[in-house]
Structure formats: structure tokens, C-alpha cells
Figure 1 (tube, rainbow, N blue to C red):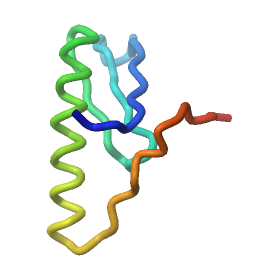
Figure 2 (cartoon, helix red, strand yellow):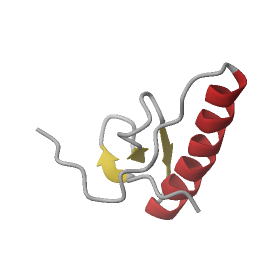
Figure 3 (cartoon, rainbow, N blue to C red):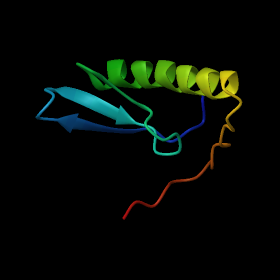
Length: 70
């Protein structure tokens, strides 16, 4: 299991739950339920990390604490 913060919210526009991973730029997923959005986000995190490593980009360490969003 990844330890990155995942924020899940309902998107009326998308008619789906959206799961965002703020610590990994552009990493997000969606699903018809919160559980599906979370599972899809975990897959997106794995793909994000694998792609970053493939291109030699750094992978941020999970902060391990609640992020503060403005």
C-alpha cells in the first residue's frame, strides 16, 4: 500500500468520485464508488512512480501527514 495522501470527492460534472494524489503532480483517478476511485488511485500511483523511474525523474517521499490546502 502506498502512503501518499489521497483526497476523494464527488464530481457532479464527471458523475463519479474523483481521487487526487496532491503529492504526485497530475496523479488522479476516478470511479463510480469511493472504493473504486481509491483502488484506481492506487493503480495510478504505481504507474506514476514506475513512469518517473523509467524517465529518471525523482519520486517524492510521502509526507506522512495531512497536507494543508489553500
